[in-house]
Length: 174
Image 1 (tube, rainbow, N blue to C red):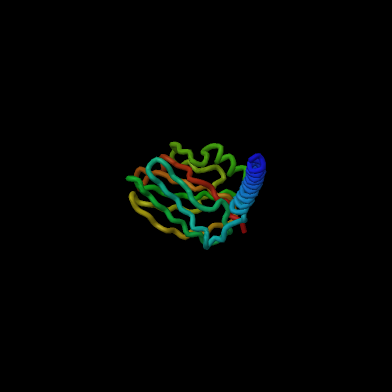
Image 2 (cartoon, helix red, strand yellow; image 1 turned 90 degrees about the horizontal axis):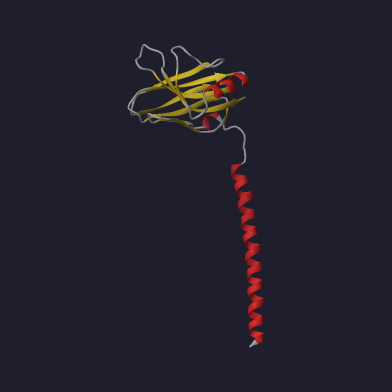
C-alpha cells in the first residue's frame, strides 16, 4: 500500500510541475503575442486609414489611427445628436503650438469659445457641417503636420462657433 501511495505522490508532483511549467509558457506566449499585436507598425496608408468622428450631443470622439501617411483620407462623420455641428481639422506645423493647444483643450475635453477664436498656430484644414441625426463621408487632403479634430457648435449659419469638443489628434507624415 505504501508503494501505491508513493507512486500517486510522485505522479501528482510531476503533474503539478508540468502544469506549472505549461502555465508559464502559455503566459509568456500571451505576453509576446500581445506585444506583437500592439506594437507600433508605423503610419497607416491614407487610403486605408478609415477614421470616424462621432458626435452624440455631449461628446465628440475619434476612432482611427494616430499616425497617417499624407494623402487623401476619407472620414466617416456621424452626428447622432439633435443639433447640427461642424467637424473641423486644424493643422499645426509647429509642435510647440500643437502642444500648447492641447494644454488649452485636451482630447476628450469641451469648452465655450469666444467668437472668432482659433487655436494659436492652427490653420483650418477642413470644415464639414453634419446635420443632426445624419452621417456623411468626406475625402480630405491631409498634408504633413499635426492635427486636432474638433466638433464645434454654431448657433446659426451666420455666426461664429460658441462651443467646441476635442475629439482627437492625428500626426500626418510624408
